[in-house]
Every structure is written in structure tokens, then in C-alpha cells.
Image (tube, rainbow, N blue to C red; front, side):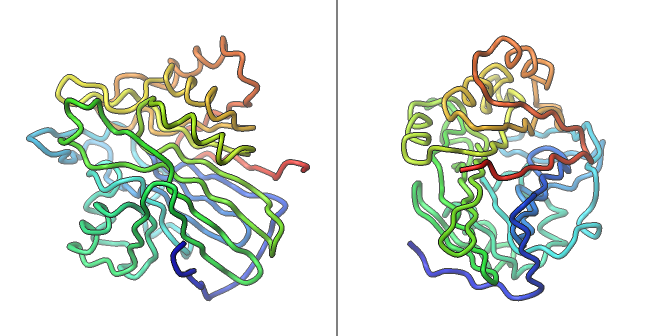
Length: 280
């Protein structure tokens, strides 16, 4: 366990209801228990291109719901990995360089080169505590696999995240973010060590680079939900870039025939999902 991050600023702890606001791609704004959290920030405009390495580019197909100037004051960023479609040039230029950013070691090194000073690197299963008033948040790195073994070295390493929100000693809510992972055996360890997931943000899209699928298709995303068994799930990362080959309709069809008890909520850019803790 690393040293806790102590946040200052206005403390408005509301444990009764939270919100996930879908900005686009894997970029969401999560507000709960007094925390305001940005995930995987990308704010390129529709029609602009992002470099994904090795001579590959992707065109942004959908305008993000807002820009950085429109965001409320942020407490921290949770970053699954440092790649052009998850932390873009706009974010590198306009975000506060001192914001805490919880991510992996590769991303922290990249962020440091860009002038960011608040990077906190986690290995798989390692946690970081953040405290704000009487509320605390523990972020734990989950296993992720960004690409098949034969091309794994061409893409940056990725992590998923579990966010556990507490009021004092009372655990209130568990949120899982898959990150840009494929299906892999270690996903089965997540519900074993972190059961009772209230809400999952599931990266889908079937991203295809150099002829290889490197993020879950819609059908695979539903299989991941079947593994981790969250109470609710919100699919994200499904249509923003030209490299996506499996849209939200694929996921909907797979969810309709799945026996999983999870309740799926489908968001378009600029829409929110309001969530509440389950009765424990």
C-alpha cells in the first residue's frame, strides 16, 4: 500500500447517489462521495486524427460531449494506459499538471516527460488510497491484457481499476473499470478477490490495429460482464475512432441473449447514468 493522498478543497460528501457522465471514448466524469474523477481523457474534435504508433492513425468519428474548460474542478484522474486515444495532445496541453493521476508505471514515465508531476504508478493488485474529508477512495489496479501475445510489445501496457468508496470504516460502493483489455484468464481473479461489484464501466469497440483485435468486441465485453458479475454495467469505448470495428449494437445483441443478471445501461455522448449503493 502506498502513502495516502490527502485532498483539500470543498467537501460535499453525498453517499446516496453518484453519477457517471459519458464524455466519449473511455472518457467519463465520475462524481460520488465528494470525489470528482476523470477517466482516460481525450478531447480531440471530430475529424481530427490521433497517432497510435507504428505508423498508424485513427480518425475521431464522434465529437466529445465537452472540452476540458467545461469540466468542474477535478480531484484526480484514473488512466488505464498512456496511448493517443486515451490521453491525447489536448489533455497533455490543457490539464492541470499537478493533478493526481493513478495509472501504471509506463504511463507515469510518459506523463513525467509531458510535465505532469502527480503520477502514481500501481502494479497489478496494488492500491492507492485517496482521502477527502470523511470520505476515502481506494483504487486498486486490476489485470489487463491489451493485445494477443504476438503483438503485445507494440502496445502500451494497460490496467483495469477497482474504485472502492468508503465513509469512515463503512464501505459504500465498488466500481470496476475494465480498461482496454481483451478477455484473458486473470479476469476470473477479479470477482474472486473483489466480489460485489456495484457498477462496471466496460471498454468495448473491437479496436483493430495492424489487422489484430486489441480491445473487446461487443460480444466479448458481455462475456467479461458474465465473469465479473457487476450489479450494473455501462458500456463505453465503442464508436469514437475509426479503428473500432464492433459497435454498441453488437454489445446490445449479446446482452439480450446473455443469462447474466447485470442491468445494462446504454449511454450516448453527453448522457449520464445515476447510480446508488445497493442495500447491504
